[in-house]
Image (cartoon, rainbow, N blue to C red; front, side):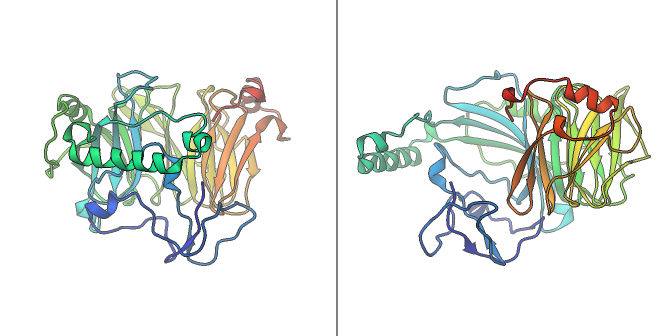
Amino acid sequence: MGRTVKKAGKSKKKTKGSKNPEASSSVNPAVASGPAKVWQPGVDELEEGEELQFDPEAYNYLRGFSTGWPCLSFDVVRDQLGLVRSEFPHTLYGVAGTQAEKAAWNYVAVFKLSNIKGKKREPIPSSTVDADTDVDSDSSSDEEEEEETNEDIKPVLHLKKVAHVGGVNRIRSMTQQPHICATWGDTGHVQVWDFKSFLNSLADSGPVVHKEDDKIHSHVPVKVFSGHKDEGYAIDWSPLVTGRLVTGDCSKCIHLWEPSLNTWEIDTKPFVGHSASVEDLQWSPTEAAIFASCSVDGKICIWDIRTGKQPCISIKAHNADVNVISWNRLASCMIASGCDDGSFSIRDLRLIKASVCLCMHSIFRKKNISEMAF
């Protein structure tokens, strides 16, 4: 699903762009010179300033929606519409945090997307079987023209804007109480918000299309933590303990948040085991006291909050920044990681030789590798 690379300016982790709804809603990649080809991580090299292009043909349905300013992070908010939804039209709720041109212009976008219509993916595309690409092309074109002229089948975006001091590096919704969200700001503050009133308002909005609400609402966060020494990106809610949170910063420190009477007690003594910025955090899907972290130092660490502030396991996973990790939801001994050089790895923690501790015992007694599903 790759495309030829295009020349571009050297990108940074955060890019504050212009407020251009038309540009942000575009889904077509820039046209590159030369034939398209699939880029192979670890085989093909990117030249200085080159960027990969996505292939829109890989998607059954692809559409852009403008939230105003560019957003570095978003999260889907769990709703009560059912866990298994295979029939169109779809509705979903989400939150996103902006990276505006000026700090005072930032906000959290609380949104509802409804009337999303598409088609199920065929096991074997009909164009491959019938060798009739012209028919498929004409059909696709007709569907696009019909959507442009028929307001009833257009998707609808309902948006509420909540003022946020500074840009939002990352935003996460709590699994157990989805209206509770945490934001990592580029000001170095972590804030917890209650967006219940905004989500309820969106739920009552119905299918009627209306103009975007440009008003930026003032809303007070329920908790603000300024104990990090620097801004950060890593943040994760526990899937097993309601309200338990970990946050990691660019100064290699990780702090634990414990829920307490509608607020949080935050351990001011950080977990320290990385030598560079902590890029991502994930709680174990099966063990309430265990979480994983990854860092610019190329390492993945496994921590047990019951055994002190040092990692139980430290793995040199990549030779460059490890930007993201994903813990297997069915086999908790398996963890995947993604690197800044485009490579990724999948590791079985049972194969890591380390001192026996409670953390490793908890992880290694879980399910077989054959059950892996990230």
